[in-house]
Image 1 (cartoon, one colour):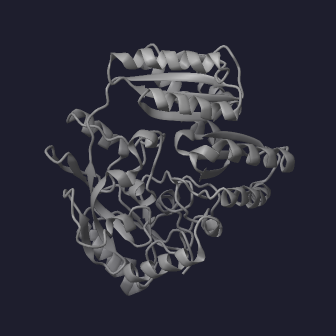
Image 2: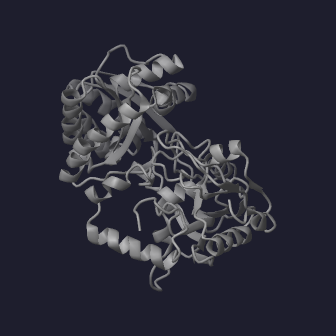
Length: 459
């Protein structure tokens, strides 16, 4: 990479060896050839400013790297870019217990923030399978969701303030601890979900919640898709839900083969639910049991179990949360999509019928956050197909899938971002006029087009 020596004199650590470039130049997306030019490891916001100004002067593109758990290629370096890893900017800076906020650097691992909040008597509710390796900066870049969205919302709902370095090399601060601030545009929300295309987050002020009351976890076997929504409606109307998660019988089989965890249910079914309820008072447990019994009586649930210990509750959750890890060896093609909650059964039926009719040799693992309309579709690669042939056929699947999404006014990306994977399909969710506005906004913050170029849209 040209003039890399001059950058090495300005910041703490730059790596150019092949192994580091390969490791930090990719995310969990498996379908791209990686070609990172070098990797920079800044340790402060000031060093990030130096990196951006160097990149502008040398016309070098930059790709942000966090925990690299993304599934849309948003952190893949394929064109010789300089990767900017935030793993050394991993400090929790301070806690404001009165305002219930905490300032963190972008490289803080999500689980570390959760544990810190718990130690201080608070709660950070954004939770998903990759919390042990994902980083806060990446969560902000993709507006990460997860299993608690039903009760607590998305990452966006927990960001009080941001410090960012724009493509101009400017260090800007948006928001902070203020609850009310009616002084014009809130640029904070432009950067949340922007995938590093406007600038890089170098510090975040995170809101915290009070810890929840004790939680109960149930697992249900459900006979059909319509029954899922009836169960959801009944539980949502009667008890304080914190999570309502779905997975198919194929997903259960794959995760059991991987983990050797037993199912707590004796009845087999095509659909399973993991439901979490907050016990706000003593009456909740009785109402939860009554609701469960009604679902069985109505035929909406075939079988069910309530976790009798924290350990059993963790095992129930593992049957849902370990699905991605369990499918990894199959090199699945993943889609992360959403529709409104009420249209979820229609969406599942239509897409499942298309897959069975058009691709009978594909095995599909369905799971997702059905309580907020977000589904994950994992098509498992048949052993006899090459990666190239498998990808070719999956791209044809996308044509059918996104046509259904467009018809139902859904989103081609619910929580993993657009990146490279969803870029060709952005028009299924966003109007051409919207995309034009987004390109104009990028030009304002990144006039030279160096901030994660080629992601979300081409300029």
